[in-house]
Structures are given as structure tokens and as C-alpha cells.
Length: 104
Image 1: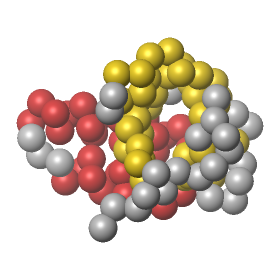
Image 2: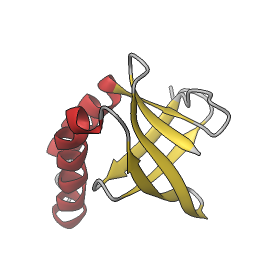
Image 3: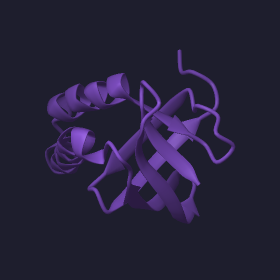
Image 4: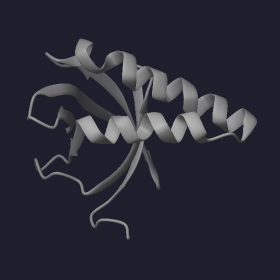
């Protein structure tokens, strides 16, 4: 199981994989103890991303995703922090892609 955590190690959500269609992984979201502290930001980023897909204006989505990355870490099923990831969640489902090395 994948986990989304706060930078200080608190569980935001468990991500129960339901399909893998590389490069995207899709999962059901199980809220963790600190979900409520992060839900507004995560869902706002998801909504901004959906709007950007329609309008091709990525400014808000990129800004919000920067905030998401500044307060979260993604752990793979082995419990290892993933260096690079792009994750979107509406609170019920999540989709993300990842890389095991930092991007330049």
C-alpha cells in the first residue's frame, strides 16, 4: 500500500491501488488521522488541475501543486520515500505517477 504523509511523518492517506496503467497509478483513498488538515489543499489542487486540462492555463494548478509537494511526501509500498511524484486526489480516489530519482 502506498502512503501520503505530511513532511513530519503523519499519515494523510493510505492509497489502495486499484489499477496501474503506466505511467499513472489509480487508487482508492483511505483518509488518515491528519487528512482534514490537508484536504482543502489537496482537493483544490485536483480541481485546479481539472480546470487546467480544459483551459490550458496551468498557473494555478502549478502553484497549488508546489504547495502540495512542500507539505507532503509519498511512500511506496516498501515504505521508501519517492523522490519525484505528481499526485492528484479528489478525496475519494487518487492518481499519480512517480520516478525513483529526482528530476533535474
